[in-house]
Length: 289
Image (cartoon, rainbow, N blue to C red):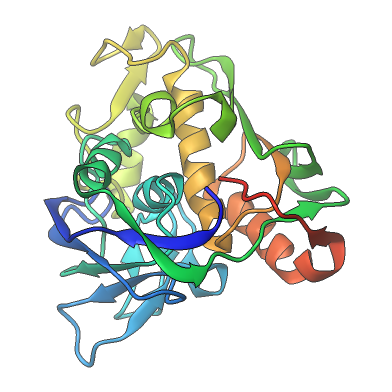
């Protein structure tokens, strides 16, 4: 989508349980003025403060991405932000009455459907032009990495490798030119291995996780089949990557490849790109999304 900026055509509401804290919250997606960007507002905290969906607002990346400081934080934002970015929503006010975005069914499918139900409208302000990546940017931690390479189109590729047969080694690659995000990426659900669940809960995590909002497997297979795609776990990791990189706003034209990565590595890459974009990129008239 090129040309003018876009916002939501009307407000839309969702209520649900958050993955990690297990609290029920309500989210209201609202139109926002041009050049305001995508931002959260905690309606249960006063005074009101905008929490921008930008790299500089990231405050934690353990098993999800969190924005905002203590007392104003909003956790597990990646699925919602991926859906907004894929729908071409530049400006949105996201009101939430608690500290974590609802997990819904563990994917971004619900968010994509809600956004599609109201649609978007063009605004008079011009969307910033995309830029063309000119040299590689790499972040890594051991054999896990995320690399952004110069490319003729925006593309995301993700590889995972887990020591259970149900997941194993799998990859997925997607570009906006390949087809609709809402059909090919958004439906992929978060996943977990059964033997890790008790340990994570003892650390105060995944309190809201269940077989209704996450795929779970053990050494014998999936506990709650069927899968929506043969490589649904890899597609879900790609979904997370899109959501985390959306914190950059308009993405450069590049091929981002991740392997065994994490929210931390995703955000590290976004931070490097945000810091060095002015020197490693040149103006490109094509909008990547």
